[in-house]
Image (tube, rainbow, N blue to C red; front, side, top):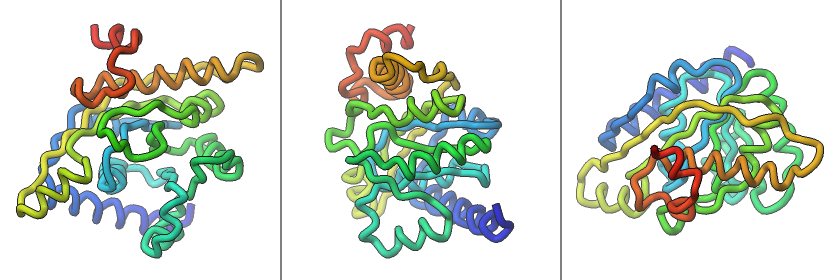
Length: 227
């Protein structure tokens, strides 16, 4: 990574942190788990609103940050500029975007720090949707530690309502314990990825209030994690 790219990333992280903490009241539980995370790491989080992107930049303290942006934002000149300036990656969510996945995996294998929302999109229900297998696949191929995060208060409607009333919205970020996914087997891969996607999503659900747990609210694994 060039020193110029490193400087740009640090500058944007600082700007994002100042913006988030100026516009909102942010409470973080377990932030030291992110600050101390070393080696190959995949941060997985629920996805409620557009401000989640700024929170990602504000939390991360590593220059080898990997962020994938949904393909729908290609139409935004600002997002295209950010992707180019920060060396981020666009991801086609509704097709097998093998090129981007290979690049993400390559960066992970160099010890990168990936932040990803396994749901693949902002939740229209404001609660967890069924997770997609991408995070489990990347973790099983790279050996990365998975660090789950639960975010509340970043719903677009809440942010807009608070700002319209000139109030600072309250955002809570809960960071869980890191865990790993076994290597991807040669057989039964679909079942393997489904099982470990549920594992990832229930770890996120365990960090959220009940109303945010969505399709994982009654999952047996969540009950085990909540004990």
